[in-house]
Image (cartoon, rainbow, N blue to C red; front, side, top):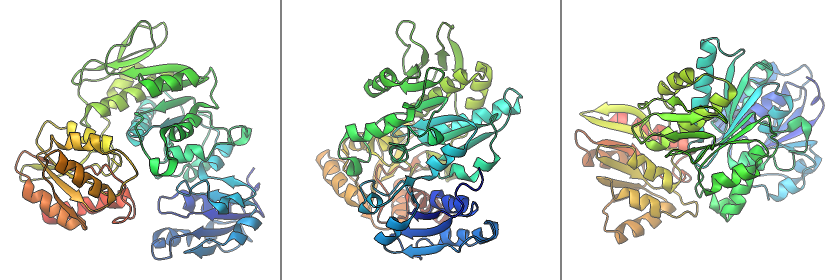
Length: 477
């Protein structure tokens, strides 16, 4: 119902720079709601989002009120009088301002209440964006071949709010949503609300690792939010998870049908998929079916961890009805995505990669292992109360180590020195880090930014960090 928000006073908490807050404003303003935007950041930092909102008054229904801004602070009175608060995922749920709100929603819950499309949801600690993007890529290819009706859409934590396309959706469409633990946690308590029920036809888990412990405090709290992804499913749906301790717990608890994936053949008649070695194809079998090849031996994105992500996507696609040959062909041509082991430049025989989305130590270690060539590693940044041992172990295999400044790098310095590993830095500017990496590299080497840390402090976010890295490399080569 187009006007169900007409006349409501809505407070958007956390405008941000990734589009979720912005699209919530647009979506609700165009439905007649009065909007107040509040953010702890000031107008200078939020200028790109504010500029985009300037056009909303032209889209909104007649009689809509101008957008009101409260920046640099929050006013408790705004939260008490608002009919609805739209929460940005980055806002901690224990905020006293949220405790004063009558009703809390997010761009994801607004989307779920209005979407008629089939939903595929992806979560995990690392690999979410790659897996979600590969699913979208293959679903598009299936439509290009005339095997599926409608269109395929991609949104969520991948920095595209699904509110940007919800008005165009039909029941024949597929929507792939990447969902972070924060986004899933924000749906807790709303799973009993039939209007905003998260009920993915396929729920896909990528690798689970320690992450965001600065916010959660322990793994159990972190994992509890991840479990929300399947709590609305039933036997018509499927949950896909890796064959490890966390994955087994998800599959035992999920009310959906289970599919697993692993690096080696599955035991017995277990349904799922497996890799036939790091350089072999991926096979899969659904219940009662014979194994079929769903992933070619050679894929475009390096690393066995990326092949695992593609295998997880293949299982979902197979259960959704795409034939194996279409899945294999589509995933074999998937080019990867920006900021995830993204190859972006080559100069004087040196290849440069941007892996800024590697924000935990295990992800940076996996990046190093993805290459056969010598690696010059640019790493470090702000700590999330994580164990850096995996990154130090991976960094031992790197030819050289360049550190970006931050609390995480201070921990890394001690651990690297204890392991007898040299490093340069930490550098408090990207230009200096780029220059140091160029001095360490030689023809035939790979230079990769894979921080294993958050971007807070030096950069607006991890994507700003990746863009600055690419710009710096291009400027100096």
